[in-house]
Length: 332
Image 1 (cartoon, rainbow, N blue to C red):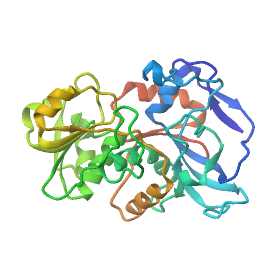
Image 2 (image 1 turned 90 degrees about the vertical axis):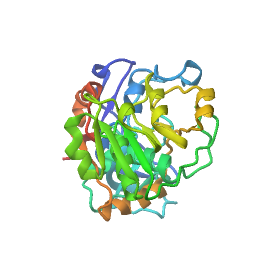
Image 3 (image 1 turned 135 degrees about the vertical axis):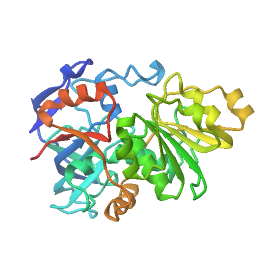
């Protein structure tokens, strides 16, 4: 079969379109013929050698590596002990995360059934492949963590804030993968949603349910927003702490990417800061799948690239300003 591999860390150009053996399946696994694979930040973190992680948290890498966690496809074979799926079932999922052994940038993948759910009928394979990591991240932050594993960044178990009508949720980086699902989930729960993104995404975000859209290229959201209950920050970085000024006492900030907050300052302001490391969860995806089929959620697709041009997809990701998700098409 064909798969994307890289034999050394580096830029998008290290990604190769190689011939590799079709994987064998073990107990509790199915073989999936991949139709589409989603692109996520951990994919390019891995390609770069995980330099984004603190050295003490960085695992040793053994090359060659095949990146990818997200897929949508069709079950081709099942292990003898598998009862959850049958040959011919359409499935989607995020494989073996946290970890870097998903290997979904390939024509076939061995997938644990615990990480899979039936593909929502309302989504095609490209849309379904774009959903898993991003929607599970938003879901585990905002709705249901689904486990009791402490965050490796804080050592504490995250507890989602119960969202309800009358609450205000601000989503920074609202047009991206996690952001556009956070907008929809907060809207589904009846919250007043403020979306912060480039102005060119306003129509997209309004269709997803955002009540207000702040164009960060012309307006500083921290100067025009106050008394927010929850901030989900899908941008992070050194300027993230500025959002402390928009959160009411008793409110919460949820940083999706690396961000530093002074614990003494947050305690003085009465603001909680909590984060997670998203984890694979087939049952959660099954629940979320029903929301897709009911029309309560949709997947924004920024662009698609053939599997053979994974380097082009990674180069697109590096340019930023993404609306929704970038997806590799594997089977036409």
